Amino acid sequence: MAQLKDHRELGKVLDLFSFHEEAPGAIFWHHKGYVIYKTLIQSLRDRLLKENYQEISSPVMVKSQLFKQSGHWDFYHENMFNLAIEKESYSLKPMNCPGAALIYSTKPKSYQDLPIRYSDFGVLHRNELSGVLGGAFRVRQFTIDDAHHFVRPDQIQEEIKNLLLLVVDFYKSLNFKPEFYLSTKPEKAMGDVKLWETAEKDLKKALEESGVKFGIKEKDGAFYGPKIDIHIKDSQDRDWQLATIQLDFQIPERMKLEYIDSDGRPKRPVIIHRAVLGSVERFIGILTEHYQGSFPLWLAPIQVAVLPVSEKHNDQSKHIAEELKKHNIRVELDDENKTLGAKIRESTLQKVPYMVIMGDKELEGKDNMQISIRTHEGKDLGLLPLTQFLKMVKEQIEQYA
Image 1 (tube, rainbow, N blue to C red):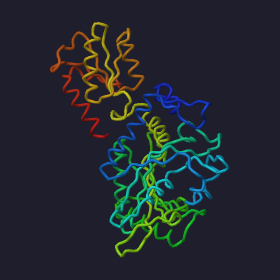
Image 2: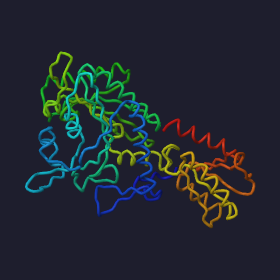
Image 3: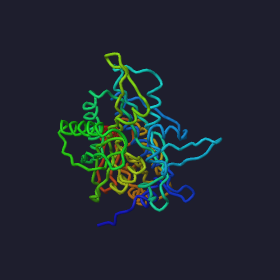
């Protein structure tokens, strides 16, 4: 059995990302790694668009007073990057929710406006100690696929059940089977005990009505509310907590958020915090080790490598590559002066899902062109018409993306 590689080693070998002492706790994304990063986020964006999310963005640096108002300061200030500017205290935001709350508060809301679903892919910073930093798994700068749902109390159940479906659907595209846990009130928490009890009952009821099996993680909730944690097991049978759905009655109260109810009176909305990936950096680190660089076709940074047998096949190969690009397939043309064996070895080491071999036996022409196909696992698919190969690849991508 081949020795499994760490994501830092794989990132270097596959030219995905790197880490440098000039920026401890941060990732330098190379082109191929950034393709994976953008593809993951775009796949989520496409799903969220269908669910009527509004994508927002808030400043990276804000006055520290915002986190004091939201309640985060008492629990997080030691893990925040804080600085003084013109005798005022500012912070690099460690979470997105106070910014989302400010955006919500900018104009009056009616009960008919809810639910409002904000998505946010903002860059966050947390002041992790240097001793605990570890590649992509523990960083100081990261992106979370955040969302904040502002809902009426009677909408909680339906929203959470829909969020559970979203998580299951997305993880299916990566062949992950999620496991669910209800995390209850921690020792250090803010807010009224009765609100905590109500929130925990709401989450438990949503899980039960969704028909999913779930465990209980006692005293493991967020400081502002209970949560549903979603775990997966990777190819090495390691357990990872990734997605989370959190119920929050506290921040709306502290930030005095309102909507006008059907009786004409102001009421507090409830915030549902949601992340599917969690830290995108950590998620990609996990995926890199899970697949050992052999990413699913829809996520692979290079989906097809076109390999001319010799220089006289270069023009024909360029035509094939251009045809594939027209269909938004990520293609790499290797027309360097190397043997075909060397080109195949390089594409295999780079874990490119498909290789198109262009030589004398491949027929010329546009509509009926025949191409030889092999996979990076070494499987020979033989000669296929270009149109058939295109159809096959597009169907495989669209099935999961």
